[in-house]
Length: 244
Image 1 (spheres, rainbow, N blue to C red):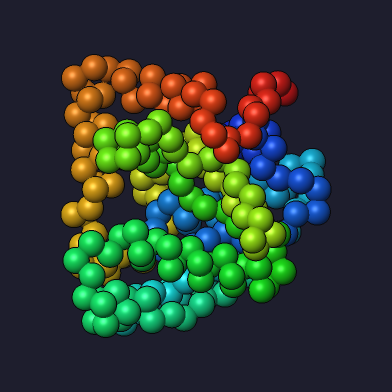
Image 2: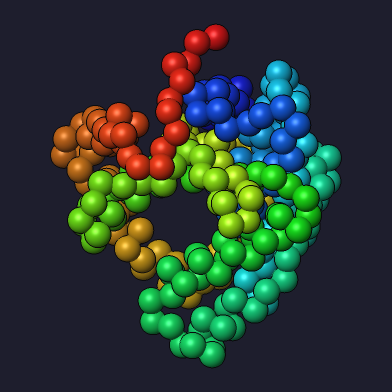
């Protein structure tokens, strides 16, 4: 995927769901993975020509794995001219040494997002951008159906009233396969996850299920995504027709 195509997908999400307003201060949540680094490129590129002016920064929540080195990410942010901050935490130690969690994903996500959102708020940003892509949205819907008995997926835009902070997901129209292509094309400085259960989660199960369904029924993945967009899910903003 080229940068031009990435910017087209990003502009589509931003326009159709009114993700950016004039004067916004937006922080990209950077895990160090391919998705968040791609999002950094996307919003940095969009900033150059988008008619609504906004400021851009980046924040990483360091979970405390000693092997993780975010220096290459800091160098990329400096190259792009994006202010970048690393927030040190003991989340990994709390999960695996103190609590000895056997299924830590939900708690880890809650603690990580809590630390990120608080840091973003303290730094004066009014929006935080998460790097969830199209596949994430579909997989979340499947997980919700299978394990919660409801038709749901996270929204393109969510206002957190307790923090007076808005979460946006500008990569919602970008497929994971295209992100991988972008990573390879632009040699993104990916920081490998050190989580001991990475690849053994329910989300990995959903990812493989979507792949299997789409192989057996070509087009199934896109039809599931269309169902989500048209599903009037509670909390989703109204979609504005994409006319340019």
